[in-house]
Amino acid sequence: MIGSLRGKVIEKGPTWLLLEVFGIGYRIRTSPAILSTITSQGETFLYTHDHVREDVHELFGFLSMDDLELFDRLLSISGVGPKSALTIMSVGSADQVKKAIMSGDLAMLTSVPGVGKKTAQKIILELKGQLVDADTSEGPDTDVMDALIGLGYSTQQAKDVLKYVTATEPSEKIREALKYLSKT
Image 1 (tube, one colour):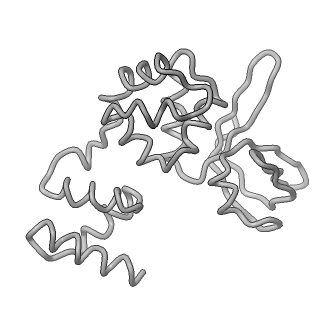
Image 2: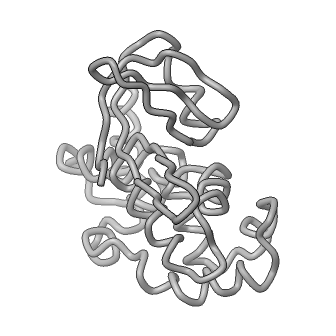
């Protein structure tokens, strides 16, 4: 199994990129959002999911381990294949997709081409309780974490910045965290 690849981007398509690693070209399927962050002809690193069936051998690439783990969880749902899972993940960040699942947001999931109401309900039913991060599900800073994640910061960025925040009130914590994040 190929777990990750680092190499030079040779070519990009609408949903894939060709990554050369030590003279071997790997065609990796990924979302348009990820492709927009990768520079052509530059070096990049991707976590990969190696999908093998009797008639197909495909690689799917992700920028973070969180994205890869969410992709794997989506694949565990019957009726969700790798292309559907990748399409679901392209509607937002991993944190946004997790929030949609945890809040039971059928509208967001059914807006994905190929995902009907029954599949969306199945995803929510099977993953709703599994996606809670042990570190963020409890504690006094849950609301602050949710606010920062809602503003587009990753879970890791929110955790890291909260180590430096000295305020005690949630609104002040958010304000102080945003000041710190704007400087980095």
